[in-house]
Image: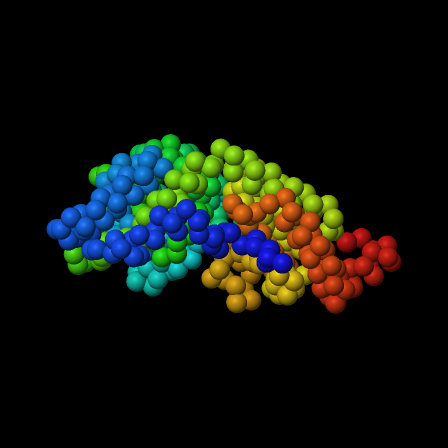
Length: 396
Ligand SMILES: *Cc1c(COP(=O)(O)O)cnc(C)c1O
């Protein structure tokens, strides 16, 4: 039987049409797009078209899209590039719930003497725009706020955030890697100056992403070398990757009118199923303002890592949340920021749905999940104490 893949927030399967669109550039049309001959110019033209279609997909102008090697690179560039262009400004504002691409960049900058304000979030993972207003200073160089959280799927009130930034010269960057291709995105409606996206989160290939850079935003070049990406991100283009990314994004946008409600319905069905059939569970994140494919649930009296291993042994792939935090026994910084107590944060699992998820996945997961949770609880001293307390009539 095919493995049950519920980790689409970590990466998505390559769309077959994206692969087909990439193939010529991995074979016959291998020419360097910087060449002057006709075959090279054809490759250049394909890149130009990909740039235009990605721009159109997010409401940007074609010359505002810069290709990068990943979403992480786009995030790094947004921050380092802005700081380099504004050397007198030493303050950064971000949130307590960022992806490591932003979080670790900020931590590294703190070690180099920058000051970072990490805005807190409420129990659903949302920042309070008033906190941003209060944190802004004259030496604030950049504000960077994740649009859709990779662990709990919560969407931030970006338009409200952008309205506050209207009166401040610092650019507003958003890590929208989880959102692009899954919910409608328009950089003008969001009101952001910079936005990071990554191909492999919406059916494109790994190792390619883009930074949207609003015209007039001051940012230093990131990689020095040739004239690629208008000299701002040098290095011969990942041609096939760029074509695959543009194709996958176009397909995702075309499919969104039916995919967004379909996946949202699957999500809500699965959430209800788990909360109803498995006691001592809780949904983490916002019930409505969340990504269509994101489910994050805490199983009390269970270690998330142990549950993951049980699921894996039964052919089901899920995650505890951030790819970078798994392997460490530290509870998720996102869940801790949302105020979960340690045990509930450690018992959290993320199931992320996508294009290939179907109704049949729900009974398949439940058939694996219910006995796995029951088995782990049967071995848990905490659960044992709890049930004994309950039968003795002790209030818990
Ligand atoms: C996956 C992800 C990234 C990193 O993108 P890569 O292309 O894998 O480097 C950044 N931010 C968020 C929110 C993500 O989910």
